[in-house]
Image 1 (cartoon, one colour):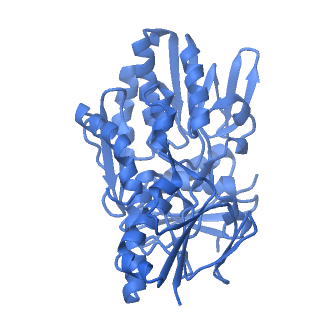
Image 2 (tube, each protein chain N blue to C red; image 1 turned 135 degrees about the horizontal axis):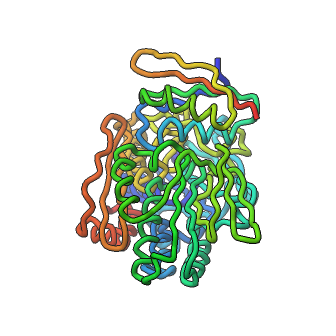
Image 3 (tube, helix red, strand yellow; image 1 turned 60 degrees about the vertical axis):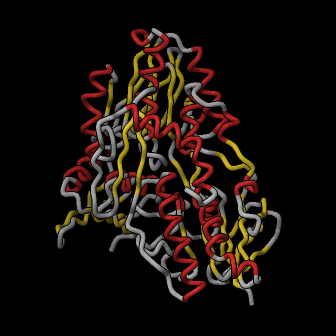
Amino acid sequence: MAKHVVIVGGGVAGTIIANLLARGLKEELSKAEVVITMISKDDKHVYQPGFLYVLFDKMRPDELVRDQKSLLSPSIIFHHDTVVGIDPKACEVHTEKGKKFKYDYLVVTTGSRPMPELIPGLKEHGNMFYTLESAIELREKLRKFEKGRIAISMGVPHKCPVAPFEVTFMLDDYFNKKGIRDKVEIMYTYPIGRIHSLEPVAQWGVPEFERRGIKYETLFNMEKVEATKDGIVVHSAEGSSVECDLLITIPPHRGAQAIMDSGISNDGWIPTNRHSLKYEGYENVYVAGDTTNLPISKAGSTAHFESDVVADNLIAEIKEGHPARDYDGKVMCFIETGFDKGTYIHFNYTTPPSPMPPSKMIHWLKLGYNRMYWLTARGVL
Amino acid sequence: MADKVIDARVSFCPGPLMELIAAMKSNPVGTTIEILSTDKGSAKDIPEWLKKVGQEFVGVEERDGYWSIVAKKIK
C-alpha cells in the first residue's frame, strides 16, 4: 500500500517541503510506494517580502507572482481547493469542493492571515501592505501624500517582525528623496515597552530613530480607530491616542479558519512541539511556518528552516522508520534600514541575536535574494 | 492551574509580553493565562502592562531558571 503524504497550504513552507520530499523520495514515488498531494486555496504563489518594495516603487507587482503548479515537482499532485476541516483522529482532511483526503502523514502549512477587521475602524481607516492589492493601494496614497503626519501601528501577533522597522526607515528615505521630509512627520508606535521585540535591535534603533527625526511611542496596542473632521485617531488599550493623516498598519494576524473550525485552537495556530515540529499528541502530523504556535518569529525564513527539518524527518520516517533531527529554532532575517543599506539578524533557541552594522553589501544581498527566492521555493537554495 | 499556558522560554522574538498580548486578545473574558519566561524583565514588564490596560495580575513565581507569571482576562 502506498503511503499518502498530504500537504495543506502552498506557501513558503508547504512548497519547499513538497519539493524536498519529491527529491528525497524520488525512487519511492516512481514505484508508487509514496503519493504526495498538495491542497492549496491559491493557485498563485506570491513572494510576500516583495510587498515592501512594491510600496516604494522598487518592484513591479507581477515580479512577485508565479503559478503555484510551475514551482512544484511534476510528481506532486496539486489540488486548487480550500481545506475546511482537519480530523487528526480519523487521519483525513475535508475541502470546500466536498472532497475527503485520507493521509498517512499530514503536513499543515496553512500560514497566517492579516485581519484588520479584528480592531474596530482599522479596516476602514488604516492602510496595510501585507497583500499585493493593499500594497498597491497604499503606494498610490504615498505618491499623493505631500504633507502631514503618518502613523505606523502594529497589531499582535503579526508576521515578519522586522517589517515595522523596514517600512519606517524606507518611508524616511522615500520622503527625503522627494524633498518633502520636512513636511512629513513620521510617528511609530509599538505594542511592548521598547521599539522592537528584539532587544539588541531596539537598542540600535532608538538613536537611529532620533537621528532621522522619527517620533515613537511604546506600549501602544491599537484598540479602536476612528475618523474625525481633522483626520484619523488611533486609540490604544493603554489609554493614549495618536492623531494622523495616514495610518499605515500591520494588522493582527490569525491562522487558517479551518484550524479554528476544526477545534484545534481559537486563533488558528497549531500546538507544536518546538523540536520535532509535530502537532502535540499526533505522531503523523507535522506543522511548519506561521501555522505553529511556537514563540518564535512568524517569517519566511522561519518557514524555510523549519521546512528543511520537516522534509528531512519525513523522508527518514518513510525510508527508515524514525525522524532524523530536531529543529533548533533557527531564524535569519534581513533588515532593510532604508533604500541603500541593510543588515541582518540570526538567532535560535539558545543563541540571542546580535545585529551587524548596516551596509550596502547586505542590502544588495537582499535585493539579489528577492530574485533568487524562486529557487528556495523549488527546494534548491 | 491556568486555563492556558504559554511557554515563551528562550523566546527572543516576539518575546513573552508580545505572546501574552496575543493570548489576551484571542481568548475569552475569564481566561487565566500562565506565561513562562526566562527573561527576568518579564517579571516586571508584564505586571506593569497588565495594570496599564486594566487586566488582572494573578501572581509571579520564580522557578528553576525561569519565571511563571499568571494573568487573567477580566474585560
